[in-house]
Image (cartoon, rainbow, N blue to C red):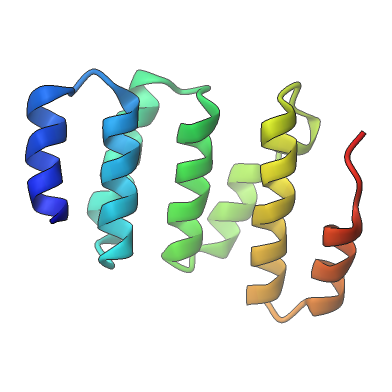
Length: 115
């Protein structure tokens, strides 16, 4: 299915970042992390500051168990002007903390309130 989607995304809408982020997620769900990273890179080239692209990049890193890279990805989101990114930073951070066995830290992160 991911292969068929790739043909559609790259043929019909190669200039639209959602095609590439959706493809990246489909590839990652199938365990194809290298192609998923390449698809995210393509989306980033088209829309480097788009929140959905940035979020997809972080989730692909999480799914591939590259926790340090995922953490680096969200490092600046806490100070973003975009509330969406600030909220997503909390979600991603909780997953990273849980994956590292830091359950109390994850619970504290969940309790944080955004202004």
